[in-house]
Amino acid sequence: MDDAASVTACEDGPLLLRGPFTLLTQDGEVIAAGRRTVALCRCGRSAIKPFCDGTHKAVGFQARSAPASER
Image (tube, rainbow, N blue to C red; front, side):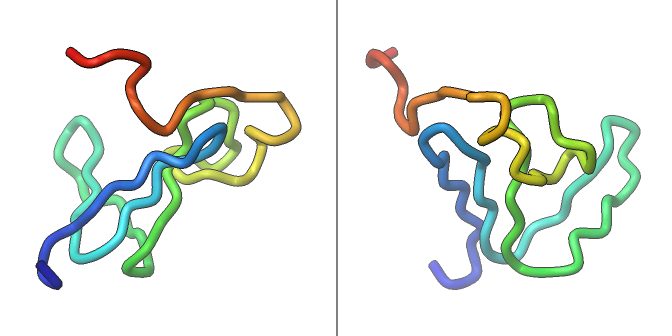
């Protein structure tokens, strides 16, 4: 699975996207990631969305890394 992308939800933090991937805007335009691992904002407060800038720590963002219950 070395050629598959993975997404890791970090507790109280970003989504880590690793591997070969393409980020797109909702209009289909490519967002240059510049690397094979990126942190994507989950708190909505980052100044560099869709990427994480660490603001989640300052605003006290909380989110589990796993679903609260099974679907």
